[in-house]
Amino acid sequence: MKTIILHSYKGGTGKTTIALNIAISFAKKGYKTLAIDADLNAPTFESIFTGLKPKYKFNDLFGVQKKKTELKPPTPKDLPVKSLIHENLDLIFANSKPQFGVGLLSMNKNFHSEALKKLYHAKQEFEKLGYDYVIIDTSPSLNLASINSIIIADASLIVLRPNKYGIAGTTFLLKELYSMLGTVKRKDYIVFNQIVVGTPAKLVTQWQKHFKKRLGVETVGTIHCNCAIALNMLFGNLIIEDDAENEFLETIDKIVMKLHRDLKN
Ligand SMILES: Nc1ncnc2c1ncn2[C@@H]1O[C@H](COP(=O)(O)OP(=O)(O)OP(=O)(O)O)[C@@H](O)[C@H]1O
Ligand SMILES: [Mg+2]
Image (tube, rainbow, N blue to C red):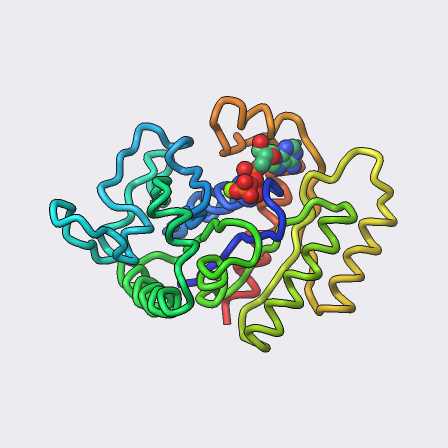
C-alpha cells in the first residue's frame, strides 16, 4: 500500500480537486483506493458526497469526543465508506464541527505526537483492508495535523499556483519541512495548477528549474486554468468526466502513472 498526500502552502490551489481525480483514476485502473479528507479546517467531502452519511469521521481517530453519550471511539477499520461512484473507491470524511476541526488543529505538540502514532496504526489497518493507494487531502500551510499526514506519506504532491506568492510560499514550505523532518524517504513532487493564460512558458520552466535545483523537487504536472473545472465545482462536483481532449485528465493520468512507477520499490 502506498500513501500519497496532497498539500500546499496557500489555500485554494486545487488540492482537493486533484486529490479526488487522482483517487478516481487509481480506482478506475483497478487499484483499491481510499481517499481521506484530512482537511480538518475546511472539510470538503461532506459537501461533495452529500448522499453519504458516515457514522465515523477522520477526526474520530484522535479521540477528542468527551461526552459519555457519544459513540465508542472507532477503530480505523470503521472509518471508510463506499464512494458509490466507483467500486474501488472508498472515502473517509472529516468532521467540520469546530471542536473537531479548528479545535484539533490548535492542540499542542503532545497531542499531535500521540495523533501521529494513531495515524501510523491507522495506516497499518488500512493496509490490512487491502487498499493499494491511500490519498490524503490536507489543510494548507504548516500546521501540525498536516505535518503528521506528511510524515506518514510515501509521496507528496505540493500544489501551487504559479505566481510570485505561490513560488515563494512553496519554497518556504519545502525548506521548513526539510529542516524539521530532515531527509526522509518520502518522494515530493510539485504540481503547477491554475496556470493563467498568458503566463510565459519560459517562466514556468524557470520555476520548475528553481524547485529542482534548489530543493531537488521534480515537477510532475502543469495544469492551466480551465473554467470547466471551476464550473464543475459550482455544482459541487469535483470529479472531472472523461474527455479525450481534456488537458486536466491527461495530466492526472500522467501523474498517476508516474507515482505508480516511482513508488513501486
Ligand atoms: N485548473 C483549474 N482551473 C480552474 N479552476 C480550478 C482549477 N483547479 C481547481 N480549480 C478551482 O479552484 C477552486 C479551489 O479548488 P480546490 O477546492 O480543489 O482547492 P484546495 O487547494 O483544495 O482549496 P483549500 O485550500 O481551500 O482546501 C475550486 O473552485 C476549483 O474548482
Ligand atoms: Mg481542499
